[in-house]
Each structure stands twice: as structure tokens, then as C-alpha cells.
Length: 138
Image 1 (tube, rainbow, N blue to C red):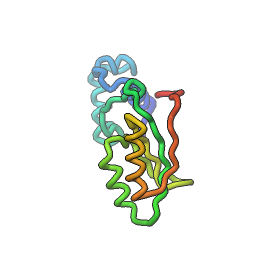
Image 2: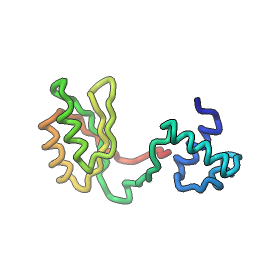
Image 3: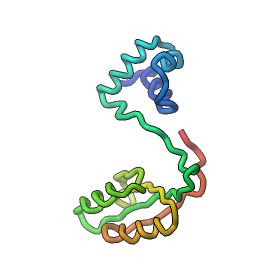
């Protein structure tokens, strides 16, 4: 069970995963060694899966898309395998409600998006939404 200090550590690391343990400790009112021990425990328990970067895709002039995917059969592996091979797909979620999956993609041109969607129709139907502006980023 995570306590408030663990939650504070996760919040700070999600803002900047490159913080030194000393700097992180100062932010959560612990020594560097104490916070390092907590971070190690969070890693060992699988709470912290990885340290990554957050790309501001607006700087890359990409078309950010969200696709609700509707499979045609109960055999989803061909679709999942196809999506896993696509560099443009940045996130994939199994969802409840309308659709089976939600995919987030970033494409450098409308032609690239069109080619992707044409191939996607071999595996699933879709509803496409294009992001116009990001309003909140955490």
C-alpha cells in the first residue's frame, strides 16, 4: 500500500525522472538515502515500471490521432501484432464500452495516415479522431 510520501515521490518522478535522489529527497522531505530506498522498493514492487521521456509531439509537427478499433472476430492477435509493428502507434489500450481498443498514433503527414488506415482495415474497423489542441498535460 502506498503512503503519501510514496505518492509524492511518484508525482515528482513523473514530472522529472532525472532528479537526483538528493533533489528528490529535498522535494519530499527525506534524505537522499531514504528516498533512494523507497524508490528501489517501488521498482521492486513493480509500481515504477520504467523511466521514460515525455515528447511534446507539437514540436515534431505530427498529426496526433485517437482511433477506436472494432475487431471483426474474437481472434485479436493479428490486429495486435500489426499494431505492435507500427512505429506511429504510441499507446494502445483495451477499453470497455464502444469498441475493443483505443490506439494513439502520431503521423507525419496525411498521406502516411491514409496508408496506415488502409492497411488497418485488413484487421479492424475504426473511428478516427484527430487532436486539435492539448489542453491539459500532467
